[in-house]
Length: 155
Image (tube, rainbow, N blue to C red; front, top):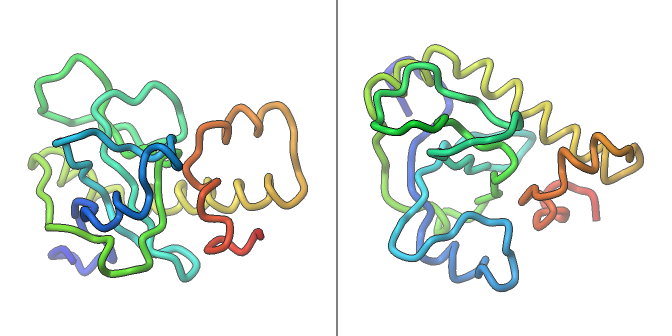
């Protein structure tokens, strides 16, 4: 946890996670050989979610960092659409560290991030359960939440 006692951690996903969720069966899960994805771990409605940090976010289902000092011409952020559920401790790998500017922004905006992410997850559950329209179909087309219906209580 961090110095302000907020309920999140920064980690990598473990090899056990990628063994369980192989890219051939779960193509929407971020997975590149020899490049671990750093994730923000947080708990929402009894599930532990891992939201990946992305270097090039091109949609709005995310939190976009405004103060990143990474040398990139793209928009960095937390990609809600690629979040996965990691309720098993063995799926959580080593601790991770982000640059100071992003950490300060994350820490300052944590409550906004968790509120927006919770809205995204609950919106997905509503979408799957009953309310389907073109906007939602586009919003959730590539989401990794599709692989976690049991954990989300929509099976």
